[in-house]
Image (cartoon, rainbow, N blue to C red):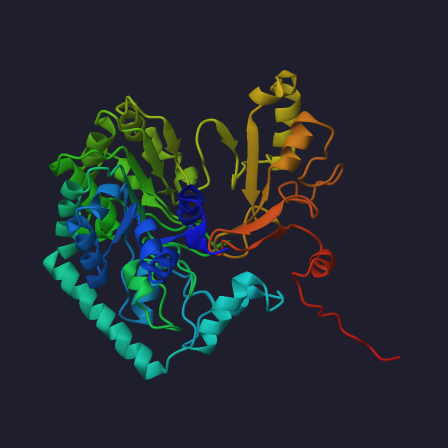
Length: 465
């Protein structure tokens, strides 16, 4: 049956499930579907890029599209002029670029693919782009053009002025998200911003990550004192957004720092003592109706120093000023106060996840509650321990934790009578997911089981008699 012959209600339901890219294709087929497939833009992107600025302003000037925008996403990552600058600015001292060579900047596609079969959905499109890579001189010329655009935006502060303009033009705007990871990994961006959508197919470039970060398993990234412009400007978007909101009337009720699984966040020293950025932060939280804050923090070596940035009381004071606050997250893995989220914890002394779950089961009395009132517990971590092998990849246990806490299930961490790896999720428990590859999801299981399920290649050596 032709789509145009379906009842209008059913057509509307089908169209509502399409993204704007598919709607644009559908609208080109005939005038009927064009009229019945309205585009809806609920978020806009901004960064130090001419294309992002132009599209942002075009939406802000459109009398229909501007009224549907509820979120501004600020991409805080700046393109590096060289490998050396990339390493100096985005990686902590002594770490260096993670396994790069001149043909594949960023974390290598092959390393994340591992022993997976080639035809898994998350690998097919990236493999096509890898095969379609542009000649080096063409990619270099295109990248240099991006750098020139970036310098132009920074020197004229076009992105700042555009943000100020947008706040006055989007009547439904309620959320501002700042992320250091919009580009995520090669060929798999977190957000398909206008800048990224305009890239030539197969364009291979240095993936920019804003804010200092480290690879999983390395020492914590150093967070220098918040006392110089050079240090503060590493979090340029954070400063710009807060300053803009402090100067203008707005209806922003949600402020999110989305680190998307990276080992980074806002420099916690901003809470050491009052400063301009802290005062702007308090002013935002104090505004009537403000109800959500997601605050990924770079805590550095605070645990070895007695947590001075938090014992100062300034963060507590700021949160106390938010009288309408409903949702708080201090790391990207937290959801809200109703969900007991215990992911990626580090324990002192002999503490560990196995004993923690035992104490929760035996001492909290949650088993006596009705099923609807029992807290939901989710735990994520590196399957082999607390540290993930790849940035953004982790194993999650939820149903297994519930079975242990409220039923007769086994503890998903460690083994009875074994002191080894009490923080290790047992094979056969949980699901492995990847924040940077949304199609990546599989059981946390033995190699042969993953091979049987079709995830892994058969790499066993065959010996002749």
